[in-house]
Length: 281
Image 1 (tube, one colour):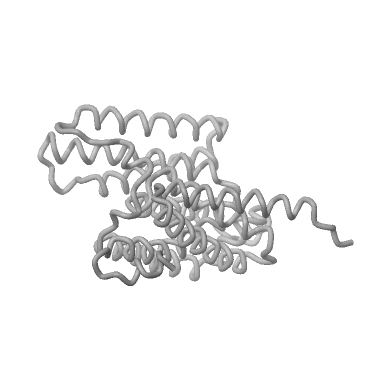
Image 2 (tube, rainbow, N blue to C red):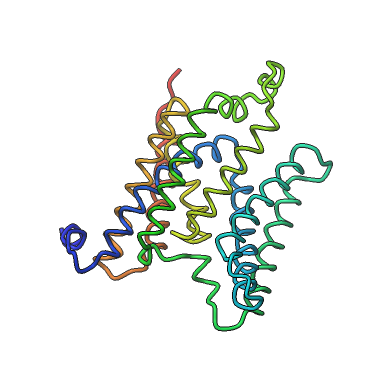
């Protein structure tokens, strides 16, 4: 009740912004997270998310050291994420290298480049703020960016739903039917990259990975189809963010880690229920 009263209090708009941003972000997390879990590319999403730090560092360096005002952290993050998505996708599809090795290499290189750029950028910049974010510092501009992302994700997911479905579950059959699976796989990775970039501004790099995978993983225990999994993942994500904000507000805890702990506990509980539930013949 105290949390609900705080949401309606005009003196603390940051809590209301955080709650609205959480609901809006849940739509993108639910849809893209379902594809990430169904296609089993969680590590790819993690690598893209950490490569974003390299772009953020380059953007900060260009702005503060070189005076290139148009190339800021957001622009750098978008470029880095799309490059990482395309490189990982091409390595996965065409190169003879082990996919997990390429993902691990990009993951580490992206973070290292970001920290080097931040170290050489004038002034004090706290890398942890980009790793974990702060949902309570969201502005109206961030809300509009998340809303724009939702429009892009929902539009693309609706337009190419059957193509992405084929890529996730029966890629070989889809290829034999003439579907350009490589193209749609790369498109899916680029969409994942854009989701990661824009939501990193809201919840940070580590929390993006958790909310991309845990709600969809919980939903997979109850859904019978991909679209049901998207709906359930979105609802679970809203529940995790809402309950996490309420608990963190009432007990004066950091909001991001609280949300992740709740999502992780529910995931473990749902997995345990599925394991011990009687199986149908």
